[in-house]
Image 1 (cartoon, rainbow, N blue to C red):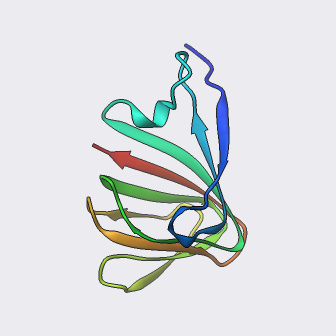
Image 2: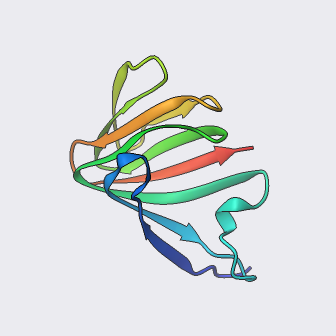
Length: 111
């Protein structure tokens, strides 16, 4: 077992605001989220925070650990999610996430 340090990044891409991403860093100093068959990050969204519309890199599962968010997928339809709920986006699918209150999300990408 190896305890991994975390790097905290204020997400500025995709016209995002109020979004902070926690990336694990491997023993070699490289972001662990860019290696292997899957990656996972923890994201914090401030009340009213948004991760702007952008395409997924791979299949993506967004899980709400706490709070409430509204997500929209490729068809533009919106779905409200709360703690314990999740959605899956197809590879390349445009999507956006908006926080209805301060929220913590786990984002898993499957390669």
